[in-house]
Length: 452
Ligand code: NAD
Ligand code: UDX
Image (cartoon, rainbow, N blue to C red; front, side):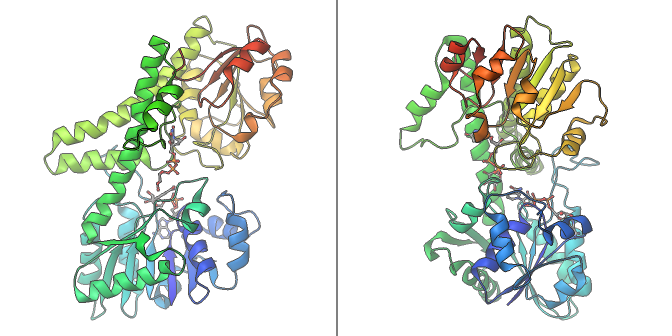
């Protein structure tokens, strides 16, 4: 089968690379309007950093995996077309700041209607509001000229940083489609693709709307757990309880489970906030303001946590960080990715810049230009410098803020770092990554999240 994927981003690239890697009998072409991104996919330096991705792409590229900007041709050739374009929060008009911006999805549907010469299976891979498939179907069917289109929903559950292992061994694959004979046939075609390497019992099939809604719901539940433990972290700080101990104690209850209970400076990433805002908007649209308010509180708690962290830093440092050098260790929204979208680091850095701090930023994977775009600053901003490693960032610093849980930060020589810092040497661990007791023995004024 010829497969096409529109959108060569964090999801389209890795997902299609895995399908090509696992299914040598299928040919997969990933297309995008962004020439630079496609060029990067065809180069040695891929546009997405994911452990294990380079090897998988190198093995399949040029054989049954292709990256191209010739969108029309790829659509014409394909029997199955994945839509993996971005669905950001709308920034204009009705629903601004909450609803999903569906213009890219609609453009894809119209493009398929325009150029397709025969029947197609169109697969929603992007995260979409429930009932989007209805709109995609209407656009395609109003322009069908005898061609038949089946729409499937196949949301992606991979997490960045672990994308390849998530794709290799997913907890489940979800496929929603029409419950008509033609719909079931289309579902089966996609089931067969995944069943090449995913145990059949992990491939779940549902109706379209359940599949679309399950994706938003899964992200809302995951984010809710983080906001819940972060809320408790504030109470821990007021009471000398230790949030890691509380998380462990409740996580051993098999009904609660241990995962996603790590207190932090706040969740980031391109998905959680966007998808919950979308859920909130949908609830309001369907006349459910109480449900909307419930889910909105997950976002409110996350905003509170990010700013609470900055305020704690400022207050501990004698209520002024003006002209003080603050080392920022980590800018990505989590470890093992170069992605900074909605990273808590952005908000913390902005709070500190508002207070006229001097920031020395180091992240192992994030490009300097990306940091500048995220902070909305020019290359020559006088208060921000970019460092090649953690030792350079912490030289003469008044404080260290750990904002991403990169493994390499655990292996740093903190005695060496302490010896080159201003005293008192503050360290604020926004990820509960480091051994605070050991740091205090060196002499650091070290604090974490939710630890007395
Ligand atoms: P992304 O921004 O990295 O990539 C989207 C790509 O689509 C871009 O390269 C863009 O140029 C391209 N594109 C947009 N309109 C196009 C068009 N009309 N024709 C061709 N190409 C077009 O986004 P992403 O992170 O890969 O996310 C894609 C979708 O997957 C979103 O709906 C997101 O919510 C969802 N998702 C993301 C993740 C994640 O971890 N990033 C996980 C699960 C689901
Ligand atoms: C998330 C979902 O996990 C994934 O299933 C979905 O497909 C896309 O959205 P992602 O955003 O890539 O994935 O990463 P995730 O591991 O979920 O982390 C999101 C944010 O939450 C990160 O900033 C992370 O540091 C934070 N987090 C996660 C915590 O603060 N505590 C935790 O216990 C877990």
